[in-house]
Length: 126
Figure (cartoon, helix red, strand yellow):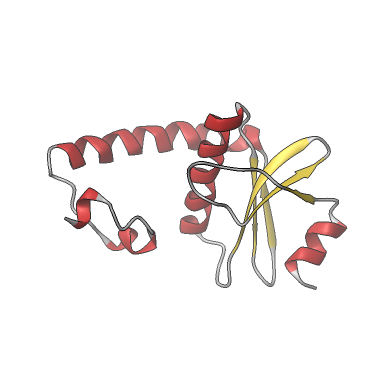
C-alpha cells in the first residue's frame, strides 16, 4: 500500500498552507490536529526526523501552533504528536544557538550532516 493510501486510511487529509521558511512535503490534519509530513524514499532515520522538526518549528513560528510530525516511506508510517516533540524543539533551539554562535565567530566546522542541507548560501560554505 502506498504512503498516500495509508495516510488516507488513517483519516489524514492534506491542507494547503504557505510557509516562508522551508517547504515540507505536505501539511496534514487529523482530528483537529496539524502535522508536518515528510516522505522519504529511504529509511526514516534521525535526519528525516530533524528535517521535519525544523519544518514544525517554522510552522509554529508562522501559525502559533506546534504541529506533530508524520514520516513515511514506501513501507512505514511514523507519527509523532506535538506534545512528544515539544522537548525536541527545545533541544533543537539550543543546538541552533550553538551553531549560530560558531558561525558568527567562524569556528563552525562543516561535517557530514551538512550534506543534507540545501542552503547554498550557508556561511559555512564560504
